[in-house]
Amino acid sequence: MAVNEQRCVWCGTDPLYVRYHDKEWGVPVFSERKLFEMLTLEGAQAGLSWITVLKKRSHYKKVFDNFDIERIARYNQRKVDSLLNDAGIIRNRLKIESTISNARVWLALKEQGIKPKDLLWQFVDGEPVQNNRRTIKQVPATTPHSDAMSKELKKRGFRFVGSTICYAFMQAVGMVNDHTVDCFRHSQLK
Image (tube, rainbow, N blue to C red):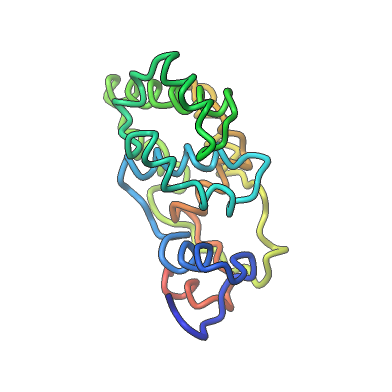
């Protein structure tokens, strides 16, 4: 963790949040498992704070088989019931079931010869969008890129992929650099 560095104001001082900000948020991700993990976690976060999800993240990895997409796609009702009774995750039936159905859609894309990472990264032409936002107030909740991603993912059968979730996902996996210009990570990720 960088000491005495100016950071985006949203990360505050919680060590978990600071570590996430400093090491992960905005770093380009091309690993399909990691992309699926972040899409799942962003969907789980809907209506909640991101720190809530971060605090549960390690348990999510445990109970969702380290986000092994093929294993998740095979989950049955018994597994859903088990997850609904697990206080270590966000126990929302629709969010849990969407993770499973999203894994099935992900695998169906691959069977059609479509690489999900390419599908996702196409909305920024395969390169991170470099924004130069001065304040957090200038960071939008959605953009035309996230609108297009959301529309395409929904068309293909993904769930919990509204435009706001898609934009948060794009920020998290480095499709956009939304660190404010005064943050030390902004220039590092340029």
